[in-house]
Structure formats: C-alpha cells, structure tokens
Length: 446
Image (cartoon, rainbow, N blue to C red):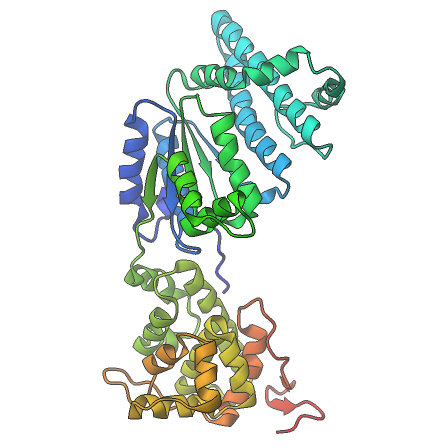
C-alpha cells in the first residue's frame, strides 16, 4: 500500500481535526464587511494547508458561498500566471452566468447576458494585456480563439475599446462579481504559492491587488510565510534581499494572517497506524517514538516514511524461509529516517558501518565525539538527537542495540531502492536473488 500526498477532498475526509478550526474561519469569511479581504493561511511544507483549505471550500459551498480554486504553480512564466488567475475566475463566473441565463425568465436572461458580455470584455482585456507582454500561448478559459486574434491585432491599435476596458478592469470585475454573487461574496482559494518560483509567487500577489482588488472577494492564500517573504525580499534587491521590506510587503497585502492549527501526532498515528502493512510494526511504541522524533507532526513527511517502510518490509520478506526479525525491521525504520532526514550520515554508514555504534557509546558515556565523527555530526545537525532517541539503553523503551555491519550493509542496500527519497544515494552493491537471498554483485569488496 502506498499513500499519496493528495489533500483531503472535503470536510468529511478530515482526519486531523481541521474542521472545527475551518468552521470558525469560514464564519469570519461569511460575516466580514468592507471587502475585499485577503487571508494568509501560513504553515510549513507538508503540514496540511491544502487539506485545510479544501475543508473550508467544502463548508462554504455547502453554505451556498461561491468559490474558485487556483493552483499557480502549474504556470511557470509570470505573464502566464496572472493571466491564468484572471481567466480561471472569469471562466467559473461565465459558466454559472450562462447556466442562469438559460434557465431564467426574460428579465434574468437579459441581466445575465449583460453580465456575460462584461465577462467577455474582461477576458479580452486580459488577453490583450498578455499579448502586449508576451506572445506565448494563452490559458484556456472564457477567451476564445477569435479573442486571441483580436488581442494580437490590438497591439497596433493602442487606442481601441479593449484598451479602455483595461483601465476599467477593476470596476467591471467588481460589477460582474456583484451580479454573480447576488450581492454576496466570492471566495478565491490560491494554493501552493510557496511551490512557485519567487517571481511567479509575487506576480500572483500583485495581480490580486492590481486587477481584482475592488470586488466583493475574499482571497485565501496558502503559503509558507518565510518562503514567500524571502521571495518578496528578493524583489527589492536580488543580490542582497531586504528581509524587512519583504515582510512589510506581505503585511500590507494580507489583512489577516491565519496560522494553520497544528496536527497532533496522536491524530497522525490514529490515521496511519492501520496503513503499516507489517502488523508487528504498526503497534510498536518504539516505531512511533522514532517517527515522532524524526518527523514531528508533519503529515506529509510521516506518510512518505510509512510508504518507504512498507516497501522495505515487503522487500525484506521476499525470502519466506528467512523472514526479517522485529529487530531488523526497527533498524530498517531508523535507517530509513536517517536516509530521509540525514542523507549524508546514511551515506557515511555505508562506508563505515561502525559509526552508529560509536555514536551510541558516546551518548551512553556522555562523551564528545572526535575526529571524523565530530565532523560528520556537524554536517548533519540533529543526527545525534535521532540516534539518542533510539538508543538501546534508553529507559522506557525497548530499542535494539546498534545493528551489525552485516545488517547495515543489507538494510542500506535495500533502502537505496525503497527509501522514499528523491536523492539517489549510493547505488546498491548487492541484490536479491530469485531465491530471495542477498547475493553480492561481482567485484564487490565485502
């Protein structure tokens, strides 16, 4: 079983206690006056920002509050990204207005037809702006092929009506949103800003302010605050980023900072305990202690760890006549955590398997490391804490003593393949034979 990183789709899929917090935030969204309003949902990578916003979107939709979801990281170029943002919103509005036009009475049809024409003008204006700044492909949306041709032609006609619509974009967009929402509000969710290039992330923020900033909208932006603040700082001085100005930029743009509520590690265990395919490991206090120390309460990192552990356990069980012991599986978990958190130390173990035992002895004797061991610890901050957490002489747990060089050799060979990280590490020097045993590759110096 492999677990995905996909966010939960709706409030019913909440496993981490987000719903209660989302209900509070959604209540504030639906009652706030004096729009527009920009909310920053801040949290580090992997902590569930997308899932939290999906819960919010579902709750708002169930309350008949219209929403639009936009993923800016799908677009690389700055010109494409602001255009994609605008066209995504306009397309969503156009589809709903067209539905109302077809199903309503004459007066409603006429009103919707007028609003639709305004949407088309806005779409052409956005396409015109893009054509002036870049000749690349336009994002599909309310704009048609004819609109693209007209936008390209407008390059030579700067005094046309399209140009005038650019100047009135904010007001026209405000009017369209008012018609679309019936005097209510539109909530635009912008996800994964911190996955964008710095220029793209800042372009999205600028677009909200320049084009959509007068409408009755609530913008909910998911981001790692420090990543986007650094991107803003580089905007002012790429050679020497101005961190203070970067923070001021975000503070001026974002009206309300909302820090993602933390996920309890107990909730992660309840959700993932049954996902570990090896039943002997799923209930192991030692395994979950290792997991918490290594990855804290980061759902995405823990899921990736569980994926790697499941594949490793399955690989170790290829030989049914010699199933892996609980000791070996726990060591596999520790080595997997080391590979994910401290790949430099994992690589060092492959060439010097005794380093783990030396660290363990130093921890027990409360002595300092020396020589290469000290340098290795300095290059891998946090590795001593992780190994201390799984020390076999630690009270309250039953961790095994450090693995032998033979065990380390076997496990590092397996984990180089199944370890669930993007870096390749050292290529395995041994393989599983068809009988399920470990065989040395030719030329390997055991």
